[in-house]
Image 1 (spheres, rainbow, N blue to C red):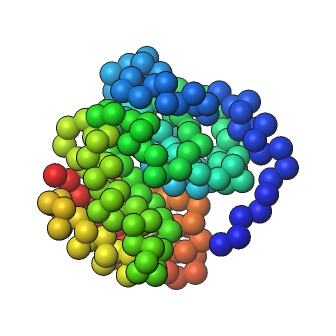
Image 2: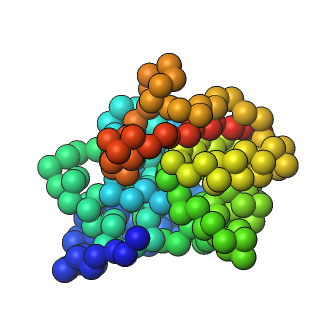
Length: 209
């Protein structure tokens, strides 16, 4: 999908109190940024922020960090936060490939929502559920490793299930049709709302090891 440039996006992002500019300086001590000892949950590829904002509002006793690579997308989340005060939420503009250089054994849960499926075989290592990324996540989890994933792409979903299984993860919950299953605690992303409106099936899996 082609991203539209947003005029002044970099300046808007830099001016936001939610965005951490010097995020690498907090490696291993992100809890100090929040001023508490609550668990830290990270969404990789947060898009325009509906999910991470909704989760932070719903669970005030959990610290949430959303990461996004593109200014033109992240700025939309920042704009949604203009009139909100959410002390348990921070955002980082970064590439997911660098995640193990940003966090160090301090994350409790990783969320992967509607990640790029990278369907070509030669791009497998770019998938956020590929072994290369699962190894990176090993370095950022604080204890039990927990990943929650949603996607509308069945091939990515099938690939991810096999990848988790091969890497020693155990399935906690799995849905082949999230909106027709009895899962009441779902918080939607902006893409998810559109997909459901168009009749797409949403797949969900929660795993741990």
